[in-house]
Length: 265
Image (cartoon, rainbow, N blue to C red; front, side, top):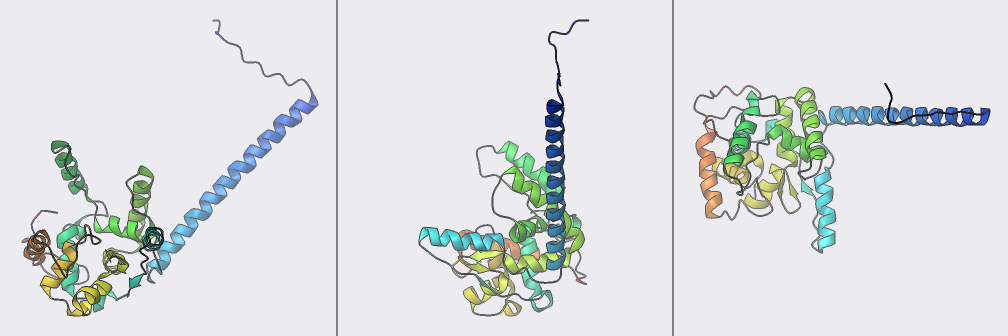
C-alpha cells in the first residue's frame, strides 16, 4: 500500500543528533516545571482552604475588585466588615438566607442537581427572558471567598472545584457561617453584621424575622436594593421569605422538620 506522503527524519551528523537531544531535554525540563507549578498551586489551594476552615478569610477577591472599581469610577469605597461567629448570629438570619437562596442546602452535596434541571427547563421554555440560575449557598461561598464575578467556563469550573473542596473540608455549618460574613450587602458593605448595623442600627443577633427577611430579599442585587428602603418588589419577596422560614432547617442541632418547607427555590 502506497502512502500519499513520505516522512523523512534524516539525522546526518553528530551535531544534528545533539540538537535533537537538547530539544528533548528542554521539553522534558519544561514539562517538569509545569508539573511542579501545578503541584505547588494545588498545595497552596488546599492550604488556604484548610486555613479558612478555621480562621476568617482576611479579604476576598471581590472586595479588592470593588475597591479598584471605585477608584476607577471616581467613587471610592472601603471594606466595611465585621466577623461574627455562627453561634452569635440570630437563627433568623440563616433561615432567611436559606429560604431565599437555597432551601435544599442540607440535602445536596454542594450542587443542587434538581435545581439545575429545573433551571435548564425553565430557560429553554422562556428563551429571551432573564435566565434563572441554580447557584447554591456552597457555590456562592466558593465564588465569594476564592474567585471573582463572571460567567465564563473557566470561573465556573473553578467554582465547582472549590465547592467540592469546601463541602468536604468545611462542612455545612462553616459554609453558612462564612457566607453570612463575606457576602456583599451594598457598596463597601460585606457580611450580615455590617449590613445589620448599616441598615438597622443593631447587631445581627438582635435582628427580627422581618429584618432578616429584608436583608435576604436583597441578596440577588444588594448594590441596587436596600433593606432599609425596600421597594414594593422587595417587600413582596420578604413576605415570601417569611412564609418559608418556619420550615427551614439549619445546621447544628436545629430539629425543625422540613415537611412544611416548600420545594421552591
